[in-house]
Image 1 (cartoon, one colour):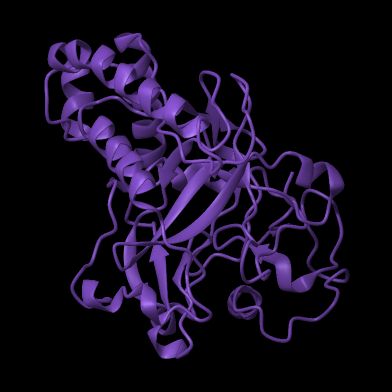
Image 2 (cartoon, rainbow, N blue to C red):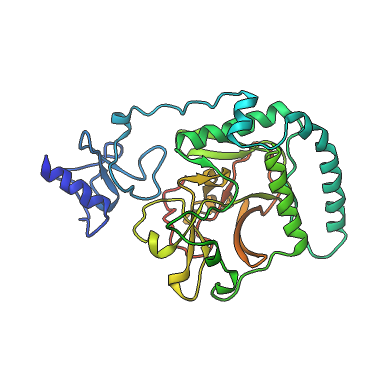
Length: 339
């Protein structure tokens, strides 16, 4: 048993794993012992599973102990209660739903005026998302996000977080970006701030988080979304890349790619995050996978700080799932087994 356990940890570190374990260890799903570096052994039953054969698949080998679906008896996540007061508390909504509803029409009118002005100019501007008018449906949308956050043990946050022991806010300096960073125009900053204010007041993006047995938690549009609409900002704890080089988390996002690699920053959404964490990536190795992309991930200089936005790169129909390219910058994320 000790030898098997040692081999299991050896596999998880992905160091010099043999090409095949066909003689003693094989995947319970496909029956193959190939791809030893991606073959996990359960810490309870010692049975093997390829990370890409699991449902939902794992993008990378997890750190620490791992238990197979049989031993964990995986079930659908417990739904967050569809209770207005609980949702208001969970998302720390600042104003009552009645006040939100009274302000909805004025915000929409302002946004429509801004949109028409944008169309009159040659340069295309970013658009604020258009929240669902029905307050009950908005509660259902927020409850779906709360369900996913609770299931993943993540606290809700809609801002970048600078925690003790990690990078200071002063380290987030867009001027350090290697080759420079695209500056977000003033008009688009106002649009981004509008999206933030709407979320604070309970007017969330028109999105539903759903649980798929193959993809895990994923996000789909709950109404028609126009091209160039700001979907969300990618948020979480900001840390130095050097501190996360041995971190097996599969959701880290590049924030600052500095010329001096010791100053490069990443966003870590494992403890604090928003709906961005549950938007899936495309399969870069498949033409059909690339066709599914309907968002772009863009890093901007916003008033001197680096920010990461997810923006619609085409019109998105209601019910369509959201996808973007995880390899927009480094081309190192393993997406060949993505659905």
